[in-house]
Structures are given as structure tokens and as C-alpha cells.
Length: 114
Length: 113
Image 1 (cartoon, rainbow over the protein chains, first blue to last red):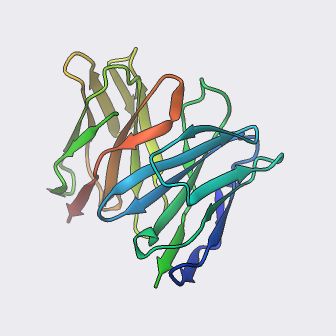
Image 2: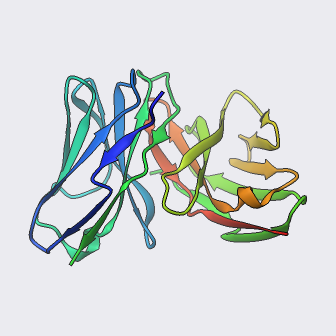
Image 3: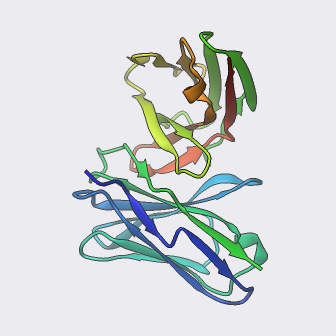
């Protein structure tokens, strides 16, 4: 089974721009979560989507948003980029439902904001 | 909210020795505790997990123990090999928000020959 895929793998943007990152979960997985990884803050939960609905949300500003499509693929968007948004953005997928705890991560998208 | 502390931040062991990484969590409602291994340039890889109704779980050279009373859990790697060198993260989540993992700060494990 193919793993979680994320595109693009690397991205360079300028302050004030917006960016969209994409994630394709493992086939059959319906839950997709997003995390931000930085050297200073570590791994932090952004949000989770299940059946096209945001089910859980972390403590990030409204500039960070996401969505999920009917095929479970997910996108996250960051508007009005700031230098501090430079990070590795990780997507994780999980089989389904509240009883499925295991999350499997993709390789991430490295975002650099200049 | 939940807080997960992880120690040590770096660990160097000789090949064949054992390595132990410890984590403590703050929220007694947490019931799921996975461990991830992250190699350079890759995403975290789930290596083992444990739920609060189990005290210990083993998978070949890797084991995890959980002490609910003390709110701490540990990763044990026996017979370490150079390919075990990576950053290891512990995490915790609660019922109803199982996908919302709170991670520890990571342990950089180096296995030397």
C-alpha cells in the first residue's frame, strides 16, 4: 500500500503571500491531520479532517485553514505568510473513526518564507 | 491542555547496548501513547504504541511501558544498531481527540560502533 504523499516537497514563498499544501492519505484512510514542525516549537497539531469536516483544531491563528475532499485528499492553506511560518508541514492519515488511533505521517512539505 | 515532557534530549550508546527514553504527561485523561522515529529528511514513523489499558507492549527489540499512576511511559530499545540512530518522539492523546497528538520535544539517539 502506498504511504501518505505530500506535494510539493519544498516551497519558497515571500512574506505576505499565501500557500496551499496538498496531502493524499493512505488508501482507505478517512482521517487526515496536519502538524507543523519547527526547531523551536517542535511538533504541533494544526487540525484534523474526517469525512470532509474539521473534527479537531489546534491553537493556530485563522490564517491557517484546511479542507478535505470527498476522496479524503486534504489541502491546507496559509494566508498572509510570516517569517515564523517557515517550517516542515506534516500530514498524517488514520484509518477511520474515533477508535482508530494510529497515525501515519507523510514526508512533509518544507516551507521557507523569506 | 496536555503537556508531554521527554528526556533525555540526546542519548549516545554503543552498538549492542540498550537505550531508554522517558516521557511524562500531565493529563490523566490521556489514553493513547505512540512513539515515533524520525530520520533526517523524513516524516515521523510510528514504531510502537500503547493504550492505557495495557502496562507493557513489546515488538522484537522495542518495548514500551506505561505507568498510569505516575503518568509516565518509556521506550526501551535493546541490542541497538547503527540504523536505530534517529530522533525519537513520544506523544499522547485523549479519547474523543485521538488524532490530536501532543508530542514530546524529541530525543536524538546516536548509536556508535
